[in-house]
Length: 260
Ligand SMILES: Nc1ncnc2c1ncn2[C@@H]1O[C@H](COP(=O)(O)OP(=O)(O)O)[C@@H](O)[C@H]1O
Ligand SMILES: [Mg+2]
Image 1 (cartoon, rainbow, N blue to C red):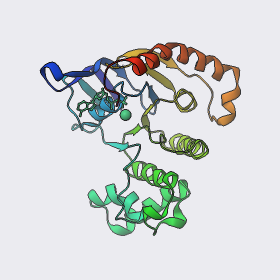
Image 2: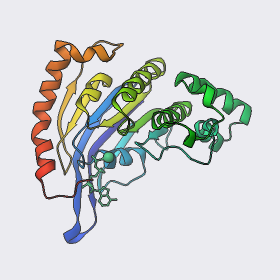
Image 3: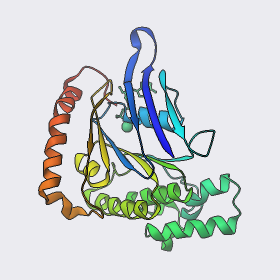
């Protein structure tokens, strides 16, 4: 399975109020790849991901896909927040996609429990999300995404609202699950360290309108862990990405466009 974006642009609004959010974006993913999309706030990352997910229509360009499913890739999206249903217990949250597909209760609970164990939440299966921390709620969203067994996992800054320690733990958990299941992941972030730690490749975007500025191969051996961040190869890559993105961050802070 392979996904390709070809010349995707998106303009919001019309006439004088029109905003070009992303402009002529083209790239391909390969099977099982962990692709990070890195860019400053407001550069169009969420817009791009929603277009890939089919939640939003591009103004021009197309998302191409070669796989078994003619309707397009089966994908799961994990958002930064609002990912869990507050009125459902943890188990039903994780099992939601399976329930929608008509999987019988016993089977969907068994499959969900598997992933709840993987994210360390099996003890909390019957609690309500509001009894849990933000980090735990984000684990629910990750378990739900994986249990659906999508061909592509789309993650929009899923760890953006977490404290640094929790984020490190969830990054490690995500890498472990990913390496066991080898899904294609498209992971959006504004955090350079996170992009290098997780990604096979990092696609660097310009500030609004978002274009692709650079595509870098990370090329650091796996499994990776947090110690990586002190190695010369990590720091060299970080400097390279920072030099590429610095101007964009400055532009996005001083520009007169709306900042999302
Ligand atoms: N539904 C919308 N209507 C109008 N403008 C939008 C809409 N969604 C996003 N935008 C604009 O498009 C640009 C990119 O937004 P977004 O994709 O959310 O960026 P990011 O996720 O990188 O922070 C921003 O200027 C934002 O204001
Ligand atoms: Mg966003």
